[in-house]
Length: 103
Image (tube, rainbow, N blue to C red; front, side, top):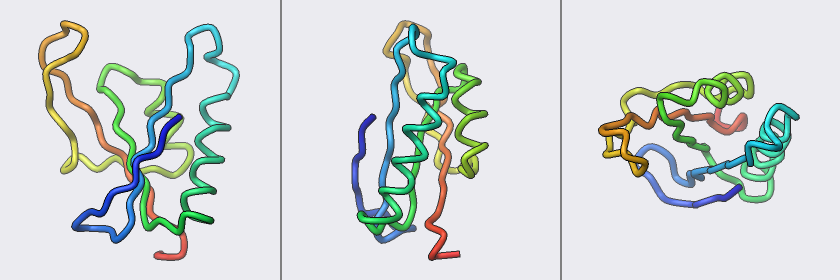
């Protein structure tokens, strides 16, 4: 898992989170557990305003997981790019969750 803090026009302090689970370890709720900890840390000690996550359009299960954790799809922030894996053009769907203290 990785964090990248950046300033954005919409949020004062925003974190981008990335998570990769080895195929052998999938289906054990490790991704959900890790992301729950990351959200707590970002909104707690890091005092971030929002967390974003990008998930490729062909990766359905992570989209369901992240929505269950409260992230909302934000199509205006989607990224269209050339695939790094020879799949042509792909869309990275963007999801955002805002800090509960900003609600």
